[in-house]
Image 1 (cartoon, rainbow, N blue to C red):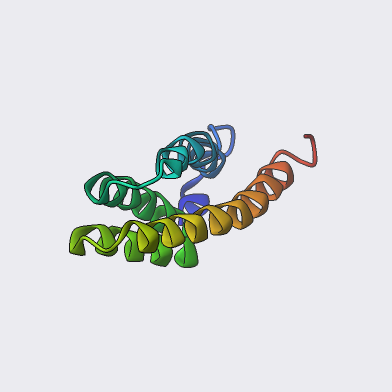
Image 2 (image 1 turned 90 degrees about the vertical axis):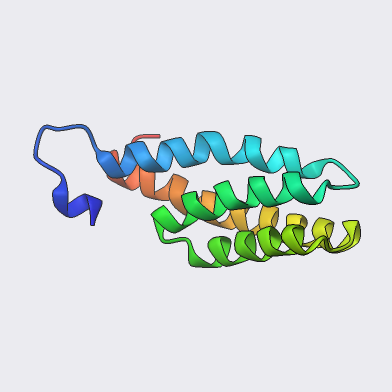
Length: 111
């Protein structure tokens, strides 16, 4: 949808959104590396990642973030939270690789 709103000669809104996501999300995910995870903190981080992923249409990442958010709200065990946080990290790596390739494509192939 953002791409359809793009006017010629204007800043690339899609690239800006993707760049922001790629810049901010790794820092958020680093917050989930602490063990044992605090359920409330994990829920807040997951909520932020869920929203960002949803904005980009990264539905699998969004779903994993939602699962972690809900697990935190339920007060699931630290092990359960850690498993979900690890899965979220793996999925983010997959999404990030795709988005980095998209940025290269949108810039005309320049790295």
